[in-house]
Image 1 (cartoon, rainbow, N blue to C red):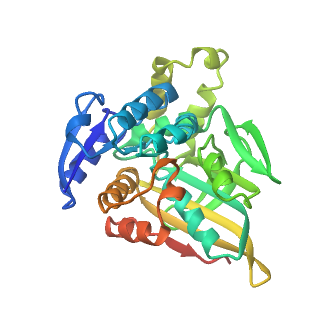
Image 2 (tube, one colour):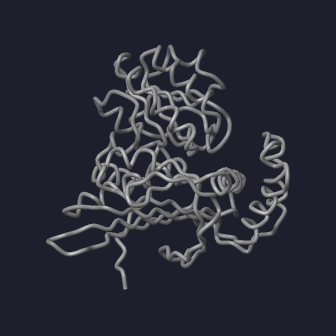
Length: 334
């Protein structure tokens, strides 16, 4: 049996702990604000939903020192980059750090891996996400939009790493119903960091995101452009922006979604493989972490600091995810 420690208090921490307690592969679950009091009585440590790379790195190093596998659910590209930089230390400690284990990044990385595997060669990946700012976890969606639709977005075009302002390049993207057509913009995302290294033939990688309610998203994006925001973007100011956006009454559906398009060649012809996935945000936040715990509990032997595509096999991952109610669909292009 497996003992799991869930750190922190934000994001979907309480829901994650409750779901893990019901899992037959998990013997016990403890919630702690920090690692020191949890490391001794646990087999797997799930880190907090944090955006501070220094905090995430320190927590991962403490987990490695205790010889425990560490899973980070943070979607922040700064956090993912900091954790992937611990690869040599994780290998020396003979343990595992998984960076970006969520829905985007996380599920999206494995959607790309599955699509690449179905082609003879792949050179372009387009990832899109849309989060609902209505219903439970609405604050999580708002914080996500503020964090990822502002700042600078990393993209790869023609094999060249580039940086562009997040929130630009609006594009209409179709998601499986009931989400349908949504306008997405460049997102400050973590996927290009790991996908470009794991799949060197992917020379074009772009991630775009948005909220299902464009009015709420517009409030966040406009407020973040107020002069002085960059110098004053403390946690307190971010909270004020999120509260302001939360006061907008969204005419939105409670569904969130991801879509991945991977283009390459199959039998000598160009082909694009498209996957889509729709669920409510709480399940998208929690289910990939539960699957990660189940896989580690089953005896996964990986060592190092890795992104999800370097750790999990898509068939097994999506089979376990479907059991949690999150089902991947192959989309046919009209």
